[in-house]
Image: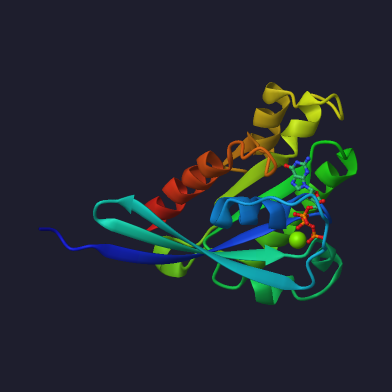
Length: 185
Ligand code: GTP
Ligand code: MG
């Protein structure tokens, strides 16, 4: 029988205030959702253990970074040794999409892959969250072509329309990022 290998990966979750970072993580890790908003202070942590394949167990250490931290000076410390990231925006609030470019730039300027893996930017996936509200008539439809182009230009691995409330696409987005992170080594 082949040996089981275990990997521990640090993954960042960033984005503007109230975009749903904590909710996405709680859905992903605990499969719960609450509509009460309690803003994260500083940073929170969560661990998700995935049986990736019969031989591979992945432990994802998720760093849930408060939206307000974009205006602080701690992100460099929080980003240290991260191997992947999600940038989240709220599809009902266009100004949070403007934050996306800023967060991506913040990540790219403060964290790189280890030298042993060739350095370079860590893989980042963009999440267009609260898609359930679009279907209820709030905000604008996400244009797939525009998003593909935006991701190519800004160096995102890919984008997903997610809903923490309805549990849409969160596993898919995580699997996508994990595939990229596992390829790094
Ligand atoms: P900060 O910690 O302040 O940076 O915010 P955050 O990004 O962690 O946002 P949080 O997860 O706390 O969610 C903010 C609000 O949006 C809460 O009231 C959530 O219930 C709501 N919310 C989050 N995700 C969704 C979603 O997919 N759909 C809907 N309808 N509401 C959501
Ligand atoms: Mg939060």
